[in-house]
Image (cartoon, rainbow, N blue to C red; front, side):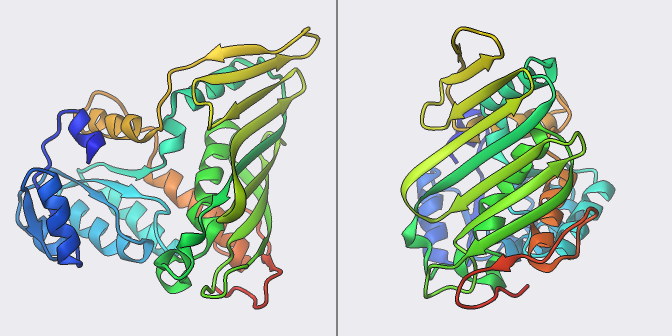
Length: 319
């Protein structure tokens, strides 16, 4: 809401099956129209664009209806709870006159844009390793929809891992191979809450992506090593990117604008809706993240190679 308001967009309506929650949001947004479900909101013809923030299992129906009615869509990640749903949405996006964008805010952080540019300029040389870690003490998610496979589609590898996969594809390149291991610590859950993904890109670069809801101390960073140098970015220090080039006496501190990515993400979406820029985060990006991660669970469903995930918890996670 704050991001849309920052960019001068008028919020006109909100829908939630929890009507009390909808009314609270409506009041915070300045007394906007309040609906008990997405269908009645879309049929009201009071909106030009929607932000779909439901759990993954409810994305497909809302997105398809909006696109059919020519309403622009910014859809939260992961794109869906299953690959088939994501493909259906991607197909609808191609046919619709409206724009569909998947919400991967990290790629819109100023620091990530700087990192991508440095990599593309070749200052790191041929890439060797890409390490990304998103973990922290989020024990409150136990027992919520995020830890219910029937609603979320997967656990931490899908919920947070989709961010990591998108960053790998955005900075490094397309994925041609993936592996993963995971563990379930929570008792009131049927999904993994800690996991590691290993990726290989078309350009031979290797990635290790570590995610967890149960790490006692938070860590959020990207570490990229090439044959000519290294880039390091700590999300806790959003205004600085560290560059160390081979043969240099020390590391270079590159100052960047701070930003959590959400404001920049919404700004890009709105610019695309106005026709000022082309979408840089498309349905294809959301679909590829789904295909790659879901292949880790099932061993199928990816355009590239995949293997069955090894779950070292008490029970084996099932698709």
